[in-house]
Image (cartoon, rainbow, N blue to C red; front, side, top):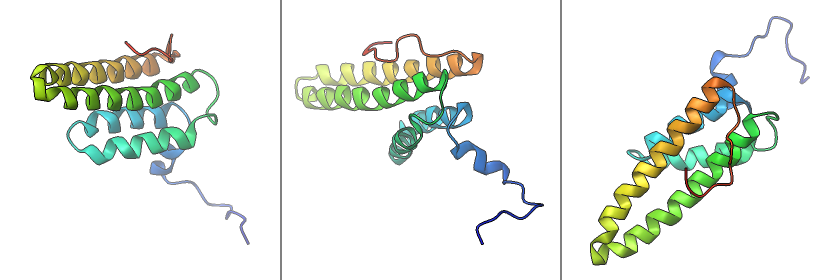
Length: 125
């Protein structure tokens, strides 16, 4: 009953959900879109948690990097939000956005070259 028909080929869009480089690339893009459309970042972190530990190889470092980018970015953003009462928070929020974008771009570049993230546990860049 659960056998696949002999002529069955998966749809092209199904592959981006599978753990691997394409999925990690989609998550990076969801994160960047999350700066404008907040919900896409949440979809990205869910995908990262679902696929972490399943991809193997160099992509695993990207999933660690992606998960840490989300949570550390959220922490930095919350601290900046609190500090907006003292005006410095506005400057810090801008710095957090730049930090977030840079981490996503560096991750996309490494992924495109087929390289792991050198220090996925880093709090900085």
